[in-house]
Image 1 (cartoon, one colour):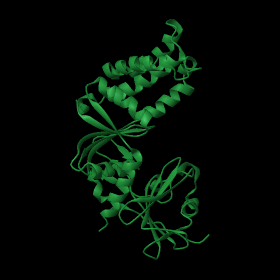
Image 2 (cartoon, rainbow, N blue to C red):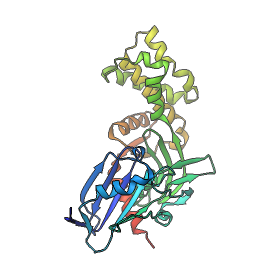
Image 3 (cartoon, rainbow, N blue to C red):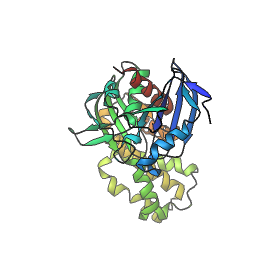
Image 4 (cartoon, rainbow, N blue to C red):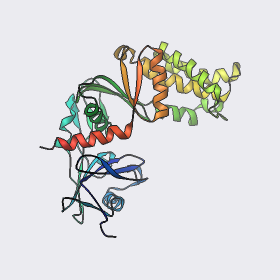
Length: 308
């Protein structure tokens, strides 16, 4: 197939499960978008070039020559396409482009650069890959923002930001713990038949309050899911809500001193961000959902603008 559409450059977010690409005009406007289920988890290193070329087939550079592609996310992981070594926090995210790696592509039609992630060695070992681009995007959309940012998900990230500078961050495996406990622990017997009905909201609020009040007792409070169904007749919907609320409440409760009563940007799925906003409201703070696609695009654009 010949080239049928021309763009200034392409931004790519290559996640573990999915791949998203946006063709951009010279003014940064999105003129097309494409997606694929060919995330890092399905690929060998040698397959990345072919997957990217297939996704971008039919695109060309409106400046002539090869088409520039800027990639963030798991393509730069050690087990991904080409490892992009971490920047070490504290760090200014304007330096992401300086840490980019440029893997070879066979036919010269595309020129790819992969942005690095961010690591932390002082104040607790930690890593992120992909979230740093969203944080740069948030800083671009909200110049001068300083405060805590939460990125709910399988592995939630909490970052202390000061403009484009990331000062410190931490990770909470809340989403993964919920799934493991829900499907593989003894608690699963109390969740069979859960449909997300009205009882879930009541259970969520109860679990969240306990997590906020006693985050240090998580391992003990978890068993209340099973005990409540056996002794108090709690239905599966209530139990599932309680488990979710307890985990999110513990995550937020353990960071209560850092959060205070500030407004916390929430970057993630709308449904999950709504739950975090609910729990943040219980401690007098405010959660403000931010569109994840908007911030990753803003981050890719900002990173590209900092090319020396």
